Amino acid sequence: MNEYIPLIEQDGITSKIIRVMIEDHKPDHDRTVRLYERYKASAAGVPILTRKPIKFEDVKGEKIARIDDKVNNKINNAFDAEIADTKVGYLFGSPVTYNADKEKGLAETISDFNKRNNVEDADSELGKKATICGYGARLLYIDPDGNESTMTVNPWESIILSETDDITNPKYALRYYKTFSWGGNGTNPDEKIDIYNADFYDGSIVYHFESEDGADYLLKDKRTHMFDYCPLFGVPNNQEMKGDAEKVLPLIDAYDRTLSDVSNEIEQYRLAYLVAKGAFLDEEDQQNMKQTGVINLDDKDQDVNYLTKDLDDDIIEHSLNRMEENILRFAKSVNFSDDSFGTTITGVAMRYKLMALEHKAITMERKMTAGLRYQFKVLCSAWAKKRLAQPDDYLQIDFQFKRNLPDDILSDAQASVALKGVVSEQTRLGLLPFVTNVQEEMDRMREDAIRAAENVYGPDTLPNNQNKGDGEDEGTRTAGEGNAD
Image (cartoon, rainbow, N blue to C red; front, side, top):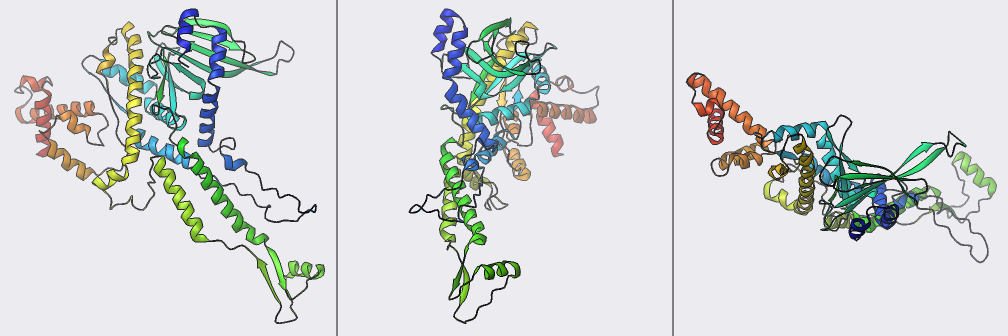
């Protein structure tokens, strides 16, 4: 899609370019919609849910009465949703921490922005869309109150153009979506008319196009979006922009078919043929048998039983286990309900079991970091106009991701004590999983140190550097000694 950049710079954005871009994006649009519908376990997205019973052909021109096409179980095993939810919970279950220089006031500005936009949930949803569909998109805008705001945009509605093939650093972007209005040419005011919308963003302006047929887009509005960069950007799941479960969808489909067919066989037991050996049951006998449940046999050599298929449980179970193992292996996921994830597995053994998932999470973390850094580059361009930040202050923001795993507080505390004096306080506190904001924790420790010193020396004799809260190392060291006492 990036081949449109020279054309846009030469001719500007036009209705024709909008239409052709949307047409070229259709394969990605259909792919991402299909993946998300499958995640939602809708009939449109899961192949097994639309499976039809097998139709048997006539045999020698005669219709054959069959009972084994009466059962058609459609069992969906949502491995794809489990794969996505596992990574999202592992990576975003603990919210991303935003660390900035508090003295410049940037930390407070970021905190207000995050709270106003429920960023913890927004980050998780953005990561989920990227994990499922291969990439996610986020739009920054100014709300009616004049505040900077953010929203997650569906990937199938987003086209990101970048000169570097990096959707976290866009040159232009297009969001297209469908709404409706009432009435068609005044003939029927209660009729719903579909409106196809397209919003094109560059570094300063958003162009709004509309179409009633999805082909002829007309420019309806043009306005500045108040930022110095394109405010619609993407976050890829990986360089190839593929969803986590895409590689194993054929395996999941095979698992669904196998389990559904096994369920069919079990349910068909009650529809099995009744075989009368050495006895003839006329229609009257059959009717009496259905009513009473009793069959009278005249001879000891006569026998009645059901004709059923023999199922090899071992082969079926082995096949299902192998498919499940391969699904999780090739999707780089884990099954946390496995018996091995109990109280007996800790430390290095746990890390080995999580290694594949961790590698996948690291890739996503780096892509997310790039996207968040671009986000604050855009935001700082607006905050600079309000004198809330400098344009380059986004370079001073750090993003910290923590894995969402059960905490072993005792082991973590012992490791933290061992690291005291070996690494910086910021690094040491950042390793503790229950410390969600390192800077806030360091500020609290400094305040505790001041109060502890006041209790010992009195407020009038407190050393100047502690009274003002200066001297981070000394303050945190005193706090540590005070806690120890």
